[in-house]
Image (cartoon, rainbow, N blue to C red; front, side, top):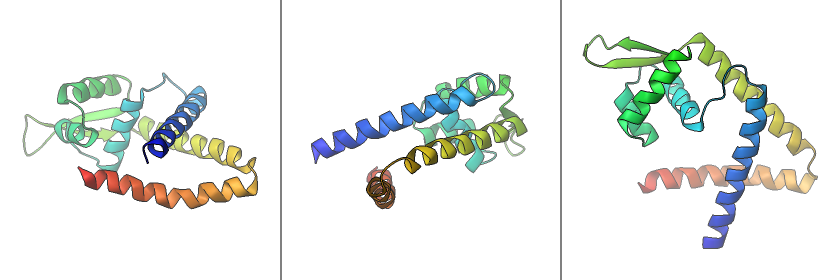
Length: 146
């Protein structure tokens, strides 16, 4: 199992790295670090989330997320607004530019990977398709393990 786990993690990391590099070559604006992209995705799925809650979701220190928020606000990708119930807290929302950037990222990523999958032999395509549900269950198992 240890060898399978190591092979899986090496392969997934390589896949993510290759796709990320290729996709970001096509992206307008400065490239985002993976953690910044993850923060944008968290805010997208939980509009109005606070910095502390985002830090918990990302398993990062609050000051690290706060620094990322500052950079993303400066880049025009996040909006920070005062929480109406607690004037000391802020709520985060994506800007239209961030929505467009995430849409472009997803579309480009999907087209790139789909094109590569289409070049593989049928057996490889079937093996990948069969593995996706199992990988989803692995993610669920890892999340629940905490």
